[in-house]
Image 1: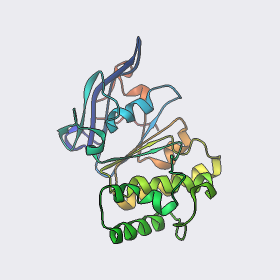
Image 2: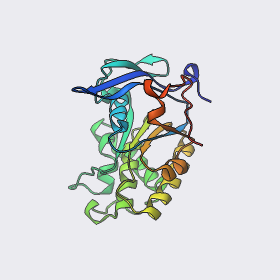
Image 3: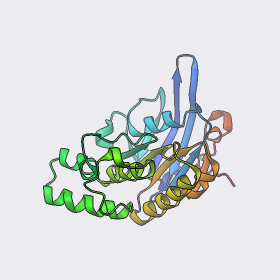
Length: 230
């Protein structure tokens, strides 16, 4: 069980409204060091909005996001050092696989040799050795998501946020990637929040599965952040 005192990530009573519609109502969640938490809920339930708040892409109307005991209010997305993977891989079509994975490292001014070594290692980790010079237009859906995952992991993020990353894939491929991603995150020790509407996928990826409906005021949230799905 992860308690607020030992959490890497702590979301505390976050609320977001779009006009008169309250999408998140005092939602709270904890993620322990190295823990992979799957957030389960139907489309439109606010899962992606919560990830945007954690990432620093959206300001909450109320509530606080903490990392390692520090309040992240006012800290911009690029300084939070959180990685993001979306359902659409959002790869750069004019770059090959190496160019996509190493983009953030090169933009940060890292030496070319260091970038090359890091990218090669990540392609091994995501089971795409030898794909470096492939154009992204030639990749399958699963391969493209592996490249997106490698790109998100390249800067060594403190936390990985995955927003329905397998939603456009067929069932067999989705299950294989879910198992691979769980193993990879455990190998790296990277904590993660993975959101999905698919319970079977959530159970394959997560150390803990929580329903978004159980985390807010209406669900009678338990501040330990458990809310686990059996």
